[in-house]
Amino acid sequence: MAHTKDLWWRTVKCQDGTKVRVKSTRHGKGKRYLAVWIDPDGRERGRAFAKKGDADRYGAAMETDRARGEYMDPSAGKILFGELAKRWFRSLVVDPASEIHYRGVHKRHVKPIFDRRFVKSIKPSDIAARVREVNERYSASTASSTLLVIRGVLEIAEADGSIKKNPARSKIVRQPKAQNRDVDVWSDDTVAALVAAHPEDLRPVPVVGAGCGMRQGEIFALALEDVDFEGEVLHVRRQIKRLGEGYVFALPKNDKTRTVPLPAWVAHTLKDHMERNPPKPYTLPWEKPDGPPYTVNLLFCWSYGGHLKARNYSEVVWKPALVEVGVIPEPDKDKRGRSRYKTTRREGLHQLRHYYASIQLDAGVSVVALASYLGHDPKVTLSIYGHMLPSSDGRARKAIDDRLNRGSHSSDGT
Image (cartoon, rainbow, N blue to C red; front, side, top):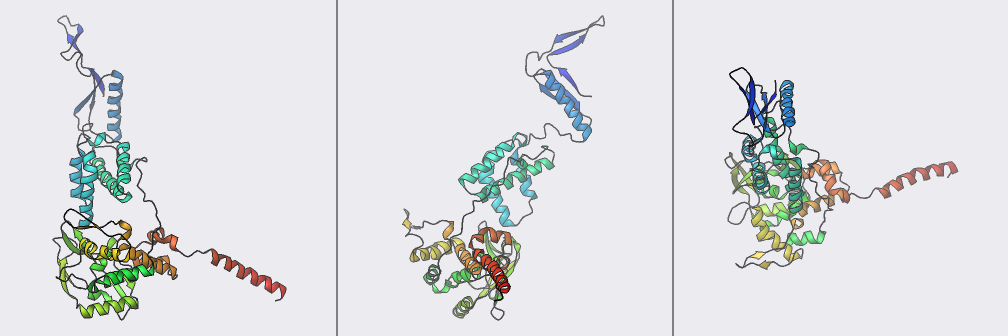
């Protein structure tokens, strides 16, 4: 049974058998009352309190938790968040790129705030405040990743019995939501000018982006065996992905391969390109830096033979083309004479994917079909491009007028 000890006074038995209370050596020092209980392993445990009532209630609560099978060691939560973060990363079962991303998020946005704190001291309000701060300073996606890491580490704490309940799952800790902004779509003239501004051997890159809606990494990984001129389709089977300092071939985003229509404009451009630049075998590891070698006949390479890399392509080819067609201003020069372009995420190669989507929707292609071409879930496609759908107001009016007018004409005998 739980009971409470007085640490400031002790009972002493006299020679005549009477008992008297005398001051202990701890009298006046520290907390006076010690709640005592027996844990599930049969060991006597205790915790000191300043007030007897608090000690009585705590001891009784621990006995109740033991009886219900809900007992938790009070010292269990005295483990640092950083220690549990190491366990969480060891338990992760994700692709290498995701692990690298989560480690970066932990290092920049989680570790400075939580790693030196005991997990039992972390409150829902602490987590909500941190997620909100990251959302305001960076982006909703970064804040979502921050919450994912915090929640994952605290899941380990809950599963291991260090805390009773994961504070990151409290109702006050809300999932960050990105602000929906309408996608800006470049004009036909702008896209045509960007294609023309590319070097001849790389001109097919924006053509494939605008004509097939592929992601940048997927375009860079496009190979001869992916092009079916007779069937008029492209097979999107892989992407080139950066992992740390190295690169690998990997499945497309969400591990989904797909097939997209191959327009005559794109097909003609690719045929001309392959005649001038015959595809050659190119090998990268598959999925992981130490993965098995994977070889394809890559369509796009630098003149020296290396595969296209996002940063180099952006700085050497894409941004100069944007300047040439007037999408962004001339670059500034840093102290070392290097060009520094002023761009945002709204001027990347991904804009050609938006251009592709706008053309498809304008032509009446269904959201479901477009989603399959883009490698999206239809809900995602609708959330991004829903504002581009042709208005149904006119068609709705026409449908009613056609039916009602036809009925009125019949009743008139006309």
